[in-house]
Amino acid sequence: MTHSDESVTHWAERWCAAREARGVGSVRDDRCRLRCHVLPLIGEESMTTVAEARLEDVRDALDLKVCRHELSWRTALHVWAVVRAMFREARASKVRALRVRGDDPSREIAPPDRGVTKSKQFLFPSELGAVLSCEAVPLAARRAFALATTLYLRASELAALAWDDIDLDHGMVHVHRSLGVVTEKATKGGVARRFRLEATLEPLLRAMHREGEGRGRVLGPLDRYGLARCLRAALRTAGVGRRELFANDRTRKWITFHDLRATGITWMAIRGDDPLKIRQRAGHRHLSTTERYIRVAEELRPGFGTVFPELPASLLGLTR
Image: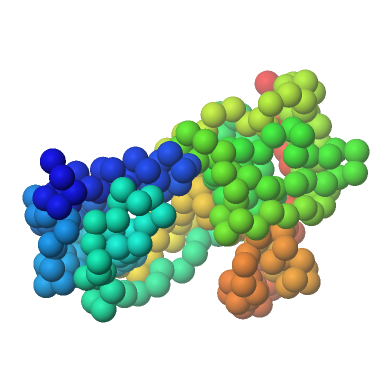
């Protein structure tokens, strides 16, 4: 088969393989997006001759799935981003073997429609405290919840965190890498950061350091695709029943593991930390992202509770 008659399906697989070889972390998800939403429509067509009208058909199909509530509008935009990236690369990829077009038919096409932005979830200190002190929840899971909240880490950053990134003598942590599906990579946006540990976290880290003799990663392997379900199950087990945490509809999003990071950032804003310090610790590229948390905190501060409270002794492995 020559590149002139190569199908979209065949070219897309070569493209995904090239990105995978470079360590791009989204390849697994992108393959799924292509398989479910793009290739059934244009997969058999020649990559060199797919016309703008056919890509408009793909876009219209995504809009229709959103209207039927078969797909979220954010997912539709993610799928469209993959389509756009494919055809940009088909025209001007650094990998010369992937250049099979002289144009980009997706360039002038309007993307799928945007919908309602669902608000981020967060936990009150009393809710997280109930989970962390509930010994019916596995200790490894409770520790992961505590670290994600008090270090404000994304799941991929937490998975990559090693003991040589933590300076217990000076109370510092260095967040500079994340863990993809198979390989390490830089943090999101390439933003590395150093900051002081929350004082209440140090006893837990020292206990875990002793147990693991300070070697390797701080946590064992994480099932990042099951962490959200694990968190919701843990909340129910601990008796946390706030309905908003479990609602998942057109305007509300149930809590996910990533919302523990949002919880920690919200807590910093509740405490009144300087916005630039919050931005640095969270690794936000833009201050406008940080300001969203600050606006929420201004409404919630009265009666919110004491943020970053002392961790329960059972979390340190002191009780059984």
